[in-house]
Amino acid sequence: MRISVSSDMDEPVARALVDALRERGHEVRAHGALSPGDDPQWAVCSEAAARDVADGRADQAVVCCWTGTGASIAANKVPGARAALCTDAYTADGARRWNDANVLALSLRLTSVPLLHEILDAWFAGRPSDDPEDRANVERTLRLDGGRAGT
Image (cartoon, helix red, strand yellow):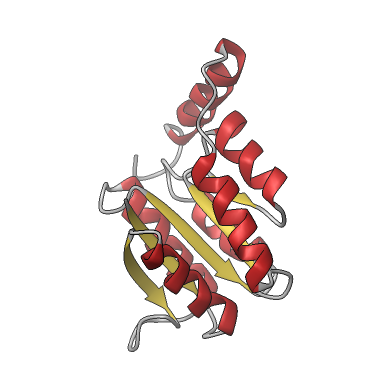
């Protein structure tokens, strides 16, 4: 799978994220502080990673900032991105299952390396629900994108 990753800071957990994704066999495209010369501002690099997903250059993305909130907000402004801030494995599983999230947002402050692996295990094991109500909610969020400028 092609995974776009961004972080506004070159923190150990961000480097561990890139390593963990590569160890799982994913092709990683880095943005922000993880890519020398890139703009590391959370809004800029999170948007870049989410655009990779929306434009088909990546299958999914993982965006990081100190709290994860700004990265999630910026990614969710990109039509076609469905970012979920996940601080534990259960939330990551639910984000994939019920929300068909395609962008994982992580807090550099709260995510330890062992917790990172738990979250990634749940994220990649999770599959979008086939339940009609869940699908209808995801479809509604896609229609919300249609009202955004530039779509």
